[in-house]
Length: 81
Image (cartoon, rainbow, N blue to C red):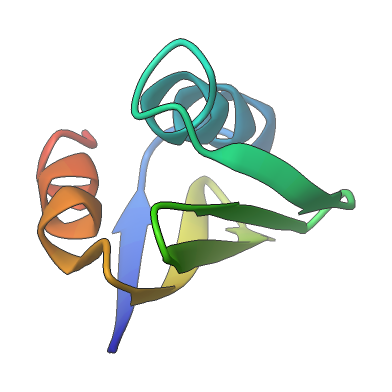
């Protein structure tokens, strides 16, 4: 299990799009099992990824909690500006 927090220059709406593209059907193929304005949960492959998105001024804070997708979460966060 991994709990990782990062900040990015991307606005929250763009972060949501990036998360869906990377972890969702067009990317790793995980299913979106929960979606609110500030939270997305993906499940599949025996694990999950939950992202909590919080705008903070000109940046966006993302808290990612995962089980079984640790390497992919690290790859996603390393690609953020």
